[in-house]
Length: 150
Image (cartoon, rainbow, N blue to C red):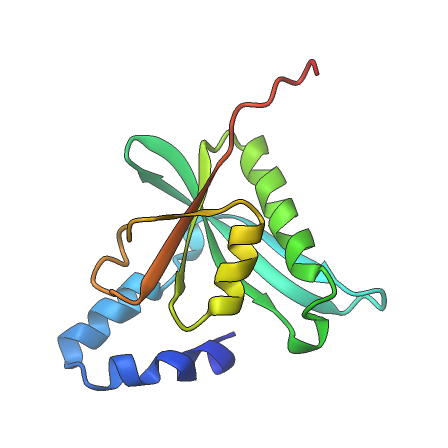
C-alpha cells in the first residue's frame, strides 16, 4: 500500500520541515493497540488480495470505529474484493456496537472515494488526527441499531 499510495502524496510532504514530518508520521501511524479487527480477503487460490482494519476511536461523543489501511492488490481490482472487505468490516463494527464507521482518504485517490460513496459513505469534515492535512477527504457511514428479532 505504501509503495503505491506514498508517491501520490510525496510532493505534499517534501517541502515540510522536521516538525511537519514528525506530525505527519504521528497522524498517519497506526498504533497496533488501537486495532480491534483486521480482515484479509483471499482469492479462489487462497492468496490474500485485500486488507483492511478497524481502529477504535471516539469522536463527538459517539463510539466510532475507523477504517484503516484498505488496500486491494491491482490484480484483484474490479472483482469485488473491496466490497467483500468493506462488508466484513461493517459486519464486525455492527457486532461491536459501533454507531458509525469513519475513514480518511486523500484527494488523489478518487477511485477509493467513488467506491466509498457507492457503498453509502457520505463526506464529513476532516477529523483528528488529520485536520492539518487539507487534502484529506473524510467519510462516515452511520450504523443504525439493527433489531435482531426481524
